Picture 1 (tube, rainbow, N blue to C red):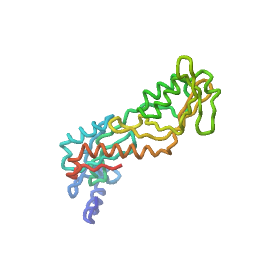
Picture 2 (cartoon, rainbow, N blue to C red; picture 1 turned 30 degrees about the vertical axis):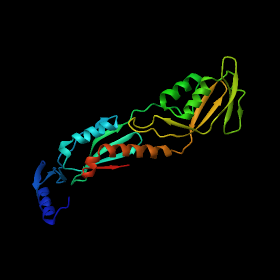
Picture 3 (cartoon, rainbow, N blue to C red; picture 1 turned 180 degrees about the vertical axis):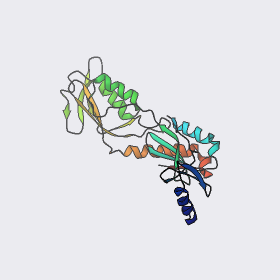
Picture 4 (cartoon, one colour; picture 1 turned 135 degrees about the vertical axis):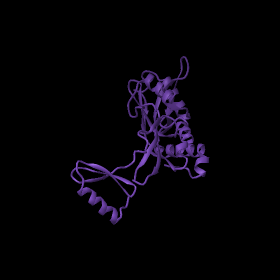
Length: 247
């Protein structure tokens, strides 16, 4: 707030006559003056104390549509990461911006780079990844590995070839593709999970691991997907200028 010369002079006069402390009103603003004569502007407590916390994008949409008390103000929705979205209010005259809603996606914890045994990797691929062609190939390889397969695998530094069971009494050599395109659950469930490249490796003991190999490019795609979802479901509010979505 910009104060005029008259306001500053009046505050100085009030500070000189301050005793044990008092609250004075000058030009419609309230000031607290302590016993030392120090002046502090009293800002109104008209902002929300805490943000509403949700775990879905639809939760944000529902809350924004129902905020009748904020219909006359601009609301800003910021996609901060693939798993975090925040709704802010407008900037008030004191430079404050209230945080109204926080969304945090519920995603499984996936241990990239850790070698898992046959059963653990099988469960991880089925429960923590969307279905893709490469995921199905990996499941076939893992589910049919022979005990000595990985020990005898051929490895050209990029892809590995292992022996898998293809029937009751038959075996076959299968080349495992690398990199593999996988889509882990790592953003909000309402949007498409980005597919990105991973390096798949196997070693003795029928253990295998996947290593991220896209340099984090999936995050930009996921954030774009989240923004597109919010834009599509809040089109009326956005077209009216009431809501602005940024990523």
